[in-house]
Image (cartoon, rainbow, N blue to C red):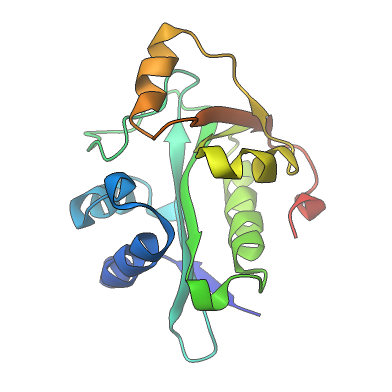
Length: 174
């Protein structure tokens, strides 16, 4: 069972390696992106560690508003002041640790923090191959207008903005 702790700047090289093992090259974000999110919302960024304290997975999230998601890889100067949404930007697990419940443990921990922060809904941009996964965990597609379609295009073909309320019991993701 992995242990969960806040993500640290020193973890970012391992985060980049895990990201590269999970996503196509055209969707990779750089060190500066992750450092930016960690600086803005350290209380919403988490690391999963194995017994030897090696990073098995990470989760990057932050408070956001109900509008459009940020562009992929875009630096943010600040977070919205009236945030009501927990934006789950990325959750990835090292290939050697997949299938061991790492993502579920990260998710449940981070969702609990979002609820403690009084964020009412969760949102994420799902890549096309993960939409069914997120639907099984109570996320549903947000109807897309032209502005949302344009924003989602940067996330790859078939990407979908999805949301859910955060009051669903934490047992929803194993």
